[in-house]
Length: 341
Image (cartoon, rainbow, N blue to C red; front, side):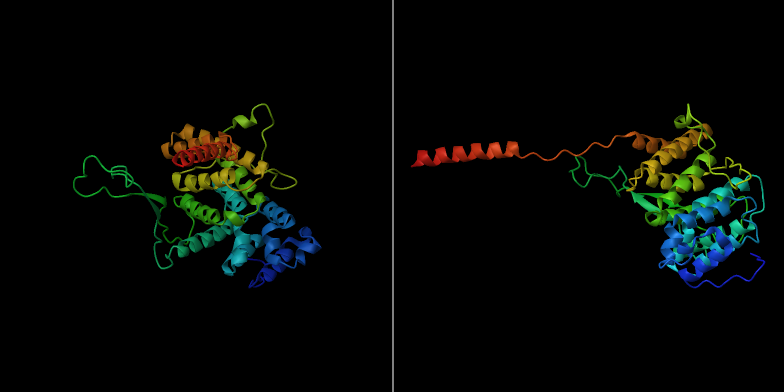
């Protein structure tokens, strides 16, 4: 990634914050630039989030000489876990803007360099640094096997049926360049990496992701009926970016649904996040319904049904009946003892 000036080396969160302050100039306030915990500021501070996401959405971002992309690349490659979390915090905006612009075939060498670095890290985590990383699978029970909790009326014949294996994530092949045929797989793997760290991500990052899901789906939501449809913030103060509908093959659709499900059903108590996740789930459902994608349709339909379920409070246990039964038993016991005497 070329750059006009030699980049500052990044070895710690303090180095990263100082370098970011130099890139953004006056966009960061003094307290943020001099924060006692630079890693926490990079991850959670709203001023940092607004400044970085605004630059990523801006016109001309993502080019090969984009200093902010160079900062994201160097900060993640520094190998500091806190810095890697801070970079992953901006994955929704990075991937969202990239996929929308990729439809129009705009050059985005800066975005692609960061995404490829994240993809390589995801592959190395699966032990695939020297070759293809293994697929992530989960074993599902096979109903052809007898239940371990009941005696089978008829003993099973032959060998027991093998467990069904579901593929959560296909193998990751080593890629050094971004091509249209592998774009969805690379971005999907980056979203899987982001999903693995969702518990550490601030709500604003999850909100950004749900907003881009609506843009990617490109289908209307019933929640927008009768009101002005919310749209993503302007890419810059002078011109608005047109967020386009993008292709959503299963290798990209699956991690998207998993992240939306976390936003919708996870431990967060933010009503705003849950409302935005509900809207994203509905838009993805209508997109799957439009394209007649059976796996995507089943996943989003189940997610919508879960979102419509009302959580009923668990009733407090009552011991009044047990107390009455114990009193009756004590009376019977006393009568029996009196009779024997």
